[in-house]
Image 1 (cartoon, rainbow, N blue to C red):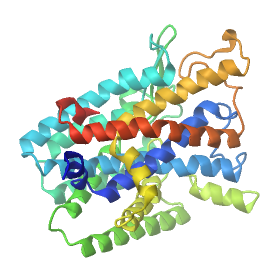
Image 2 (image 1 turned 135 degrees about the horizontal axis):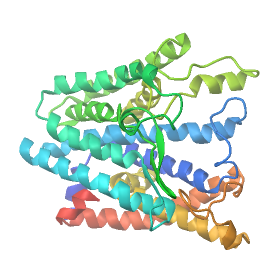
Image 3 (image 1 turned 180 degrees about the vertical axis):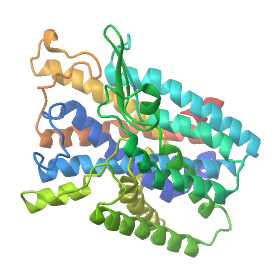
Image 4 (image 1 turned 45 degrees about the horizontal axis):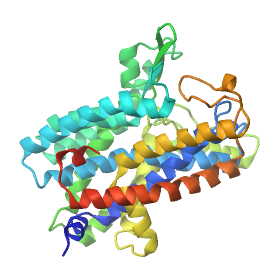
Length: 393
């Protein structure tokens, strides 16, 4: 057995498959951000103005961040089986710190193509980093306690909605970091934004960490499958019941619209920033069912998806850089002058520039084809080498 085969056999394919699926879907939303004609001027989830295909394009990508954070917790538990608690705690703390630094530097550079960092934003990588640091301290507690903490954060954080400020301009930074998006102009031409408030993301990671206990050697596979179905269906039923009642679990209630399909859109248009209880039930519930469904999956398609699922951070950074570079190329290829090049969050992406949704899908597919060999090569390298830095990328 080769080293590569040995390492890959130690991985759990169903987890890598689900992670690979959401990494693939994630790229669609980022391609839409950079290339769709209305991405900067209209809300694709607004029931009054969106179309079914545009809403679906945005809605399907809602599954990415929560499942990504959730499975990060699962991976942390499984990797901890090969370490002492002290070793695992130290690793999670250092990796979490590295992710925060990477968010502030690499991710913002690739997102904005601005080496002077006129805009710095905190997105999903920073909440993963902070959640890892918190997990590095909490992992000494019993799993049952971690599960309760995670459940309280996920199910109870919407109680804070009543304390939200009327606008982002009024929101203090400390509250923005915790529960409400905030954008600050902290100096002339300098902006800072919290796109992903922290709560309840640590709770999502803790729940994923607890899930890892279902995948340890000796855990009955039949019982795991039943648990995945029970918890997955339970989350979906809870979503439907609470959403229908409009009593708790999301900042924005649904309402009857002028057309049936717009009412359906309103029902499924739940809050992502921060992720509401209903948002997490709607995404993590089906995620658990997919984990059950792909447990014995095989075929050529799985080999393709697994590549992306095994190198998530490498893929994340590479896909952001590539999408933005393609945007710059397309900007000049369409005859746009340098004077039209936007600056700030997304350089070379004017608000009124872009293409149809059909073109966005073609660019997305082309992007995945282009990135595949790079991710495959790195996945193979990572499986056959043990340099310390590989654990951080």
